[in-house]
Image (cartoon, rainbow, N blue to C red; front, side, top):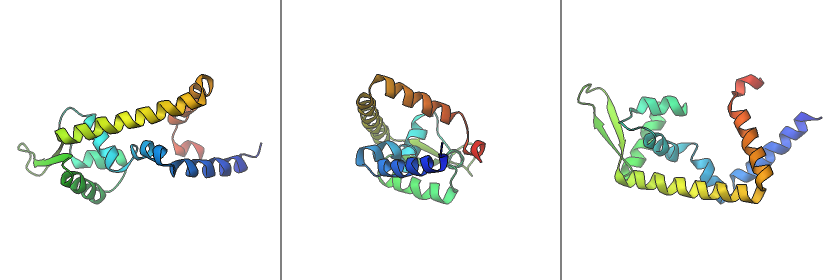
Length: 142
């Protein structure tokens, strides 16, 4: 089998899928502001920006810019930690929680519709393959 040719086809198809509007909503959940909102919603207590930076693997400057944008939209608040005045604590607002739930619902509906389109066998196979790939890191393939 020519894995190089298959890889080229996969990359082309994956790129095409990422540019499609509804699929882009799903992909957007994995990075950027949506990721930050999802990350914050998964934590019961306040989060410090460096935790977000570590999780996303991006610089603190980029996190600060994203947090500025989210704060302007009313999705988060930032405050100084009273126990350690050097730390900033980030929390979701009620509006932010509503945004997360709305986006989760859209992503879930889009994904469920995609699974229905594939049919039971192919949908289960796709999930099985994606799980298998999620259990390894890109470094495993170098």
